[in-house]
Amino acid sequence: MNYRTHFLDFENAFASPVTLWITVGIGVALVLAPLVALGLGALGKLTAATRRDVLVRSATWAVIAPAVIGPILLGRGPTVLMVAAVSLWCYGEYARATGVFRDRVLSALVAMAIVALAFASADNYYRMFVATTPITMAALAAAAVLRDTPAGYIQRVALSAMGFLLLGSGLGHLGLVTTDAKYRPLLCVLILCVQINDIFAYCCGKAFGRRHLFPRTSPNKTLGGHLGALVLTAPLAAWLLGIVLDGTPAGSVVHCIVMGVVISVGGQIGDLVLGSIKRDVGIKDMSATLPGHGGVLDRFNSMMLVAPAVYHYVAAVNGPFVGPEHVLLRLFRL
Amino acid sequence: MEPFTYKPASDHGLTESQRVQSVHREPGLVGVLGRRLACAAINVYFALYHRLRISGRGNIPTELPFVMVANHESHLDALILAAAVPRALRHRVYPVAAADAFFTNYRSAALTTLFVNALPIHRKKVPARALADLRHKLLDEPCGMILFPEGARTRDGALMRFKPGIGMLVAGTRVKVVPCWIEGAFEALGADAKVPKPKRLTLNIGPALVFEGVPDEREGWERVAWEIRMAVEGLGVSPQS
Image (cartoon, rainbow over all chains, first blue to last red; front, side, top):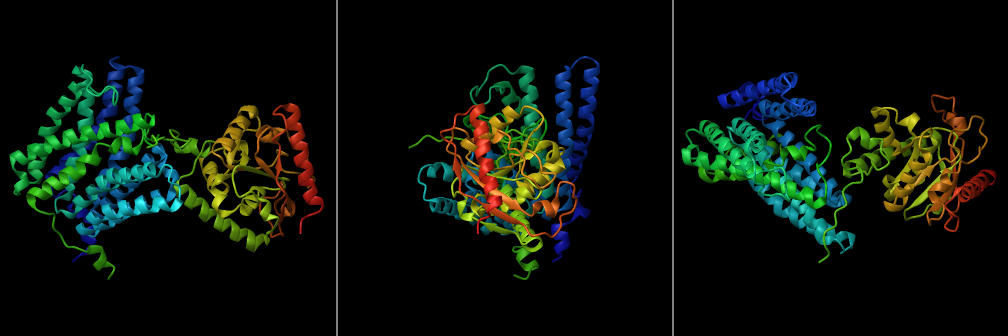
């Protein structure tokens, strides 16, 4: 097999029209958003503060979007590395916010487990990917004993285990998607729909949001926003998934609609999960890494539940993603 | 079951450039690993280039908090004292450095943070508040600090007056103050030198002092500074074997 094209096949970046549409669409949005903000600001339709906020967010998006879409266009190898980097960064923010970062042994174990998941994804080694989670749980429970400090044992193990499950294993499923031949359009659809779901929820909430569903968890989110996001995102996701998965059992209308609903609802619940964590800890943002957005985790929270849900839905309907196993092991003659 | 109590990083919410310039900086896994690598490289440098000799290492407390103070001869001084700190405590011991010299921009601050683990102190503005922040960090975290109470490097090799700021940090507390004497740093990298010379360096570490009974006020601060200066000077006059 040709290892170069397996890990780095930018020649086929736009083999699927969906990848091309989404890449172009994101590029156009990145250019239009600040122009629209400036135009509306000049017409007096936006306050100076809102205009500045939109410009800062757009500038940050201009960095995030290429950093995420670029590796996907380059190939499997860069995609898996990007997912691992995002997982590690998100876990770092979570650990610093909850305080579990002070137990460096546990954080080191979670970091190693995330690297193991990335290896399993790159190696197309599904059994290793599955085994990493229970082994990591056992390692965390055992390693936390070594300090001989029972006070706070449950908290330390629970916090690190939860961090790994949501941000290591959950987000790690994005890397596992690369084991499928259609990983590029699938990842593009997931990323686009999850992010646009947030934007739809924000816009619909502003337009006709009245009733607050979770006022203590996320006081700015409204029923109108939730339903609006669902009504707009689910059909878009279903349509795009229908094109990507055409010719497979999961490409049927019913399955695509179900997955569209899963993406929208899962994205919003992921957002609320992080909202609950932040309220519990007593912070507003996970960090100040991304101006206008907060932390990297504030941007990727919606993905941590959607990625495993969609991956396993497609795998359950279509059968396991198949491909050449032990690619890395063979490459290094191990 | 005990309720969960969360204590986010004390530098939570700061951007990276704010973090490296903040006294509230708290290192994570990557920061500690980076520091350990930097410390290993610095120790090799001192051993090979300056043949650093340390006496009285056993006087350094094994538990935090504590403050190490010494005469200030060169920019090498903080690194020399840090090299004597036990490895397990090294990432929790912070040299206090002049913000106007080492934290003027992000690159300088990041390098100072990585290699020296320094905390900034603004010499020309709000020293009282800055020292109060350092005192809270010392007691609450707890951590160790490395200080040069003269406030500046000597221009002629002689020991200068100790400023009372050291007293504001430790007066009325059980924080141990470890007096140290650095020999040879003035010849290796004096205030006017740009490149260190391969001169031998010696660090004498004396028994720790405690100022629990000293009132936390101007008179007490002056007394603390004077007593510490005497202890530091004594190490220079009759170095420990």
